Image (cartoon, rainbow, N blue to C red):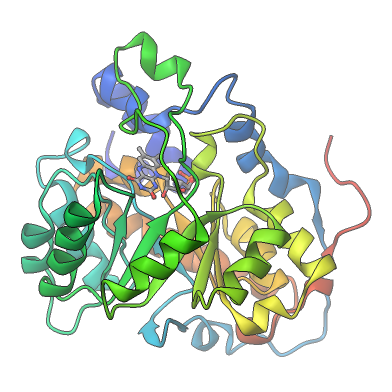
Amino acid sequence: ASIDSVVGLPDFEFVARNYLPIKNYTYYRNGAGGEWAYRHNVEVFQQYAIRSRTMIDITNIEASLPTQILGHNFSVPFYITPFSRADLAHEGAETNLVKAAAAQNILYVPSHYAYQSIETIGAAKAEGQVLFQQLYLTANDTRTQIELDRAKAAGHKAIVFTVDCPAPANRHRAARFDVLSLNQAYVPLTWEFYKKLTTMTDLPIILKGIQTVEDAKLALENGVPGIILSNHGGRQLDTARGPLHIALEIHRKAPELFQKLEILADGGVRYGADALKLLALGVKAVGIGRPFAFANIYGQEGVERAIKILRREIAIDAANAGVADLKKIKPDVIDWDTPYGY
Ligand code: FNR
């Protein structure tokens, strides 16, 4: 299908479903178990309505989209979350994502299991472009040290350490195609290990896959500069909570954490209004995975189109909600009490 026919983020998946070999499509689309967590991630945003205010000057909304993540400037409060094997959509693989991110000035976090090497990805960067490197726990500390050093040498500015996969995932859909989860072992992920990790590099290390207010508090106590609320796109543990309910729990039980920690979130964000709901709770920036993985079937152009679509939707939805300045969005722009939808 012509790229001009793609008008929203979900469209990339519809096109990819017909275009990609079924095995490749399945690898991206997969969720764990009955895929309840996968569907929940996408559907939960429709359970909360927007309380639009009116008679507010919203004409400067676009100027309020730029944000900082760990002190680095980006044009929008969303970023490309790490996902493995970008080559399954396009031969340009991760390089397309690096270039699209540079052209649109957004953050890209390459995966530990990217198809291209840290060095190849680093070399594709534009002048001054900021990338963070995602890492999993590796077989041993020597290997981990090597990965940390490679990320540093490639010029990456932070490490995103993923902590929501302590055990193998149960992915039926992919298993039918003989595409197994990459992580096949039980791994000892502990706060002691986080402390050790911080002595192995001078890059800031943020944690991806925090799912409760308890662990968000522990992250703060352990000196973690930032956390990503995520259930791994519903790919790891079925019926794990999506980012909106995790953020809502923090908002209700320990709202100060949104000031004390840099809190990002990912999972199921497909529309501008979805992103607004996370931002309203105090989430600094929102990660998007599958839509970018699928957009890459059109290469850099597709990824850039996805970025432009979401940027526009966030701006117009914020304006229609009566948000004059996205940086000052408040939780009360959403009705958290009355169930909405079906
Ligand atoms: C992922 N995700 C992921 N996360 C991570 O930390 N390291 C990784 O290597 C991967 N790999 C990966 C592959 C694919 C194909 C997908 C779809 C996802 C999880 C990812 O960072 C993020 O949590 C989810 O993708 C967010 O959900 P959405 O936006 O895809 O709904």
